[in-house]
Structure formats: C-alpha cells, structure tokens
Length: 87
Image (cartoon, rainbow, N blue to C red):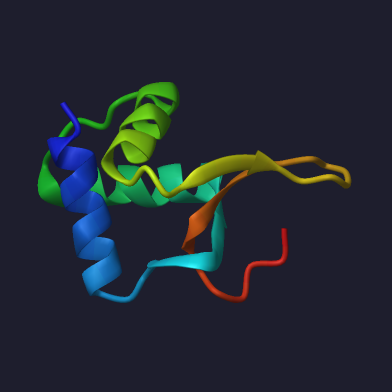
C-alpha cells in the first residue's frame, strides 16, 4: 500500500527536494501537492490526502505531524522537508 508514497519520498529525498532531518519541515498541503505532481509525471493515480498522510507516516515513522501555534495554524510534517521552514 505504501509503495507509491515510499517511491515518491525516496525520489524526492535523493533529488534533494526534501530532506529527512529532525530540523526539516514541510506543510502537509505542500507535500501533498508535490506528491500529486509526482503522480501525474509517473502516471500513477494519487490517493486522497488523508491516506497519503497515513502512508507517509507509515513509510517514515520518524516524521511527526504537527500544527502551528500561531494563525493560520497550518498542519506540517516535522522530520522531513526543507531546512529553512519557518512554521
């Protein structure tokens, strides 16, 4: 089940689009948009955002889903993303 999402993560981290690093982070919506673009390029139908989030956390257990403390309180993943994230 997590195979396409894992492939997405592997390809994006190998290409240095995202890093698996405790100080890195990315908004959930931005990561999902990137995943949908990757699916389009790979001719793979994307899964819905909730399932994608579950698969991401299953594929990389060190990733944590968190919410910003200030408005607009967007959800983000900590442990994967870009190092200059300011969530």
